[in-house]
Length: 212
Image (cartoon, rainbow, N blue to C red; front, side):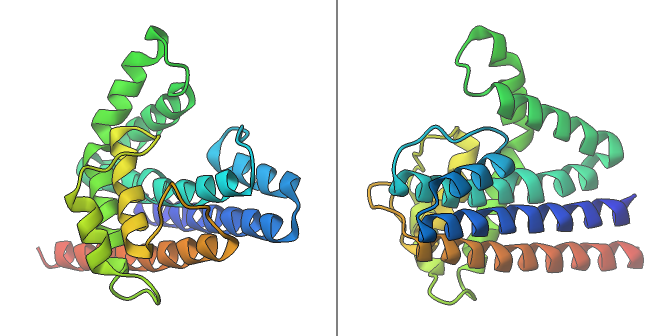
C-alpha cells in the first residue's frame, strides 16, 4: 500500500509541476487560453482572474498550496492512521476545497474539517519549502523564515497561507508585484527541491522504522 501511495504521489507531483510549467509557457507565448486551461486542470476549477499578473500569481500560489495539500498531506495522514487516514484526508480535502469558495453555511462543516486535518501537514510543508530555499538557486532560507515569522495573510484560508508565505519569502515574491514567467519557473524549481527534501525525509523515516 505504501509503495502504491508513493507512486501516486510522484505522479501527482509531476502533474502539478507540468501543469504550472504549461501555464508559464502559455503566459510567455501570450496564449491566455492555454494558461487558463493548465491552471484549471491542476486546481480543479476554471480561473476567473484577469490579466497576466493575476494568472501568474495564481500559478505560484497553486504550486505552493498543492505541495502542502496534495504531496505532504496524503503521506502524513497515511503515516499517522494508515489507509483509513489517507482516504479520510483525501475525501475531506477534496470536498472542503470544492466547497470552500461558496461562502455559505452549507460548506462550513466540510471546510472546518478540511482545515483541521490540514493544520499539521500544511505547516510542515511550509518548513520543507523553507529548507528547500537553502539549496535552491536564487532562493533564501532566511527570507522564508522571516515570512513565516510574520502572520501569513493571503486570499486562501489560514492553512494554505503557510506554504504560500514560505514560498514567497524564499523567492522574494509579493502579491502586490506582478508575477512574471520566470517567477513561475522559479516556483517550480523550489517545488521540485522541496519534493526531494520530502522524499529524503520519508526514506529516512522508513529506514528508521525497519530498525525497530
